[in-house]
Length: 140
Image (tube, rainbow, N blue to C red; front, side):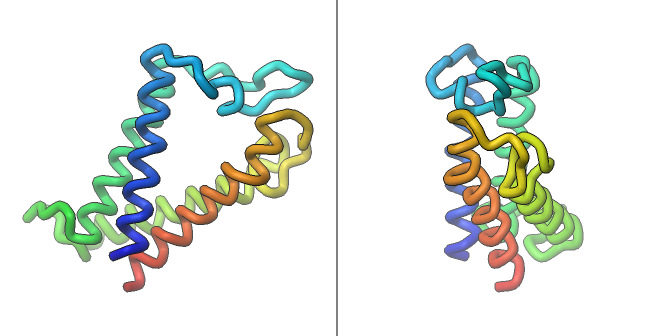
């Protein structure tokens, strides 16, 4: 339950950041997307950023079901939907940590710039940690 709770709290904090950016917040936005030669390679819209926030909140709700924070009769905590959803989520975070072999992840080719450094030392380890926490919450 501790691993699941930690993952839920981290996901909620990440969702709050994305909501902040979606409504126009600028702080730390420049280091939240990969860049090449000082120019962002992605220009996420407010809608896309809000979708990421919604996804993070949905994942945290799924984990809340799993650890018993939420109780929905239609979705039992150890039900197939919850189990598959959580395993897929752990896999997505693990894949994000590994990366696209170009701009993000431990195996990225572009290693210059603030985003790349933060990705190596914070973002990718965070994703790997989330994958691990979610996985642990599923086997306990």
